[in-house]
Image (cartoon, rainbow, N blue to C red; front, top):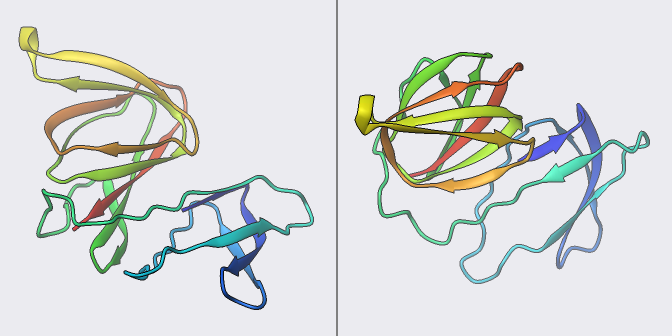
Length: 168
């Protein structure tokens, strides 16, 4: 996952290669490649952009299939399926200020914040429920357990966007 100011020019040198490969990445771009079972992936990504734009790269390596997975992609009007690869699905969730939705994630997942904000999470209803607020920054990454029927509300003043990355 690349988080940049707009797009940025990079150089990617993979360990064992003779020369770096020039490339360009866009904000929020998702790339997926299978890693070797025998060797770890080692590479150096260098920002070569002449405008000195800020760039962050979040590289995730999953060592085994999580114990709970979903057989089919999630269908939800607020979650847009943006990428499907072998054993991986990526959804984009956007919430407008004061927008609230009920969500269920019947799988383990990684969340990666694209546009930060404050989110109120509520589990349960009435006297049996409880809520908390979390402020998220661009680039925040969290590993999450499955959840059913929680509600989330954007209590901030700007659009909140995050990727939900499911391994299946």
